[in-house]
Each structure stands twice: as C-alpha cells, then as structure tokens.
Length: 410
Image 1: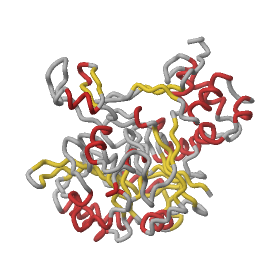
Image 2: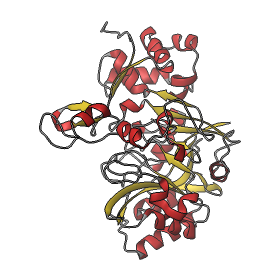
Image 3: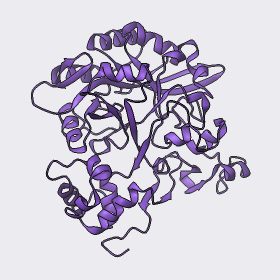
Image 4: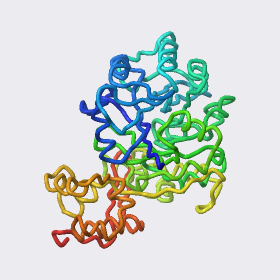
C-alpha cells in the first residue's frame, strides 16, 4: 500500500494558526486530500495533549485512530520545538520535529522539559533554551524509539542550516548524537535535487511535510512509503535501517514558490540571485539594509557537488502546485473564491482525492470531469512546464503552468 504521510503540522494551540485545526477536522481533510498517516502536532502543549488523549485511541504501538468515529486517517505523535541557545559564541535558532512512539514517552519527554524550566503552555510550538544535541539525549531517555528530524532545514532564521543562525553541518549541531539523526526536512524553499549537492547529507533521508498552519495547507508537501498499512513502527524501521525500497518518493512544492528561496528585501520589493547578492555585497540597492540570504544561496555556499549527482539514499520526488492554487490560476480569481471551491468540489467527487487528481488520474479521465483548461494546467504541472517568480524574504513565489490557458482568455 502506498501510504502518504505528513507529520509536521500545527494545532489550534500554535501561534498564528487556524482555530479549525482540531483532531477530527484534520482527519477529515486528510481523507479528502489523500493523506493516510498524519502527525498529531503540538503534543507538548498541555491542552492539546489532553485533547489527543480524548480524541484518539491507540490502534498499534505509536499509531492512533479517531476514538469516537470511523476514519481512514491514522495519526502518529509529533510536535515541533524551537531551540534557541548559544553555541560557539553565536545564538542559534533551530526548529526540530519530534516523533514519539507512545503517549507514555510523550509524557516523560514533557516532564523532563518542564523540569528544565521550559514553558510549554505559551505556544503549541514551544521555545526552549536547550542545545539540539542535549535535546536528542532527552528524547531518547524519555522514548528510546523517538526520532528527531531537523525541521525546514534551510529556512534562514530558524533551522539547522539557516543562513542567519544555523550551522554548516549536522555534526556541528548535534555532535556525538548525529548518528541518531536519520532524516532532515527539506522545507518548502528547497527540494531534494538541491540537497543532493551536499555529500554530507548522503546518509540521511530527505523528508517533506506541510508545516501546515491551516487545514487547507495540509499535504502541500508529503512523503510516500510502502507499508501494509499506516504504522509508526514500520516508519521508524524504514528510517533507521535506511530502507530505500520502502521509501517510494516525496511530494514537493516547486521550491521557487517557497517564501525563502531567493535572496531579497521584502519591504523594498527587491529580489535577486546569489550572484547578484555577492555583487551588491549583501546590501539592498534601494535602502542599503542587509538582504535576507535565501535557501538557494545557502545551498550554493555549502554544496560540494554540481546538480545532478546524488547519494545512495536519494529517493524520487514529484513537484505539485496545490489544487486550489492551480484552479484559481486557471479561473483567473482568488484561491478563496466560491468559483474555485465549486470546481474543486467537482474534481473531488466519486471518492477522488487531491493527490489523486494532481498526480495520478489519467488525462482522459480528467477530461471527463473538468474544464479543458484545468486538464491542460494539471498536465503541464506534471511535466514541470511552469513559469516561476521566486519567493524571497518571507514572500511566497508565484507558480503557473507554461502557456496556461485561462477560462478568461488571459
């Protein structure tokens, strides 16, 4: 069975996140999108931890289902934490995804963090003053089968390789505990091809998740594993044993659409390539303030390979434009338009899912259920024929299929 997973997201208890992010709502949206195995998110927050206990029941070790209604969606225990600490004379700001194998392990992890003075009530994604290396030790003492995955590894401000406050290698960040890091999350602004340029990442898997702050963003990136059914123990085994035969692919944003792909200064509406940034000595030509160095630039700095080479753990990937965005572009209206909602509902009739429509439904079958212009846009997207205005300094990029025909004739 192809099991599509998204284990980095947030709950209604995380800052700047939708109040509609409840466990039942997440389950229902996953069914619609075609996600089989999803993270609970935010398990360190006391109110959300209590909700996890009420809303979910354990089906098998580390794998949960809705307690009070039937759903095909399965949950695994996950959270994101923000580590801010000083190391080697610099303040480091690094985010990590934590996956746990049991509620008892979660509770021991929480207890240790609270004993260290961490405030877990303020935010679903808590800020903790703990070194990343120490955090893995704490996790494994609480839950020997837990896993830590560096989140959105290239984001400038809050990541393991971030240009503003990160490190130049996993070893610098995790020290002797690097051997327990089985994967990194590439984030929206990079894709596997960019990460393959670093031989130092050859021995870790590259995973992709949505980091969703609202229901509609679930599954904008995801992972596809071969399993008999969604199962945390098997997911962990694939990661630890580096089973490339069972890690089928990742589903990616086009990285240019990510909001930190290129260099730039959002307040001045200025973006540029890494080469141009060097020519400008890192300063915005409009105001003279420092440019935010994006993911593409940072990868260039650390890369030891040219594009095209890859390591032994490299798995295939496919890139998508989210269905709502694609339909909105074709219809020439905003993504929140009623016209878009109506057409998306039409596409998802008869048990079709968003991933199925975007990636797998044959062209002839698409033509039977939607407009020719939408069919053309989906096929162009699948073929990678896209026009791109890259994102920069917190501003999302704009992606649309090449020569896309709008129903408005634009």
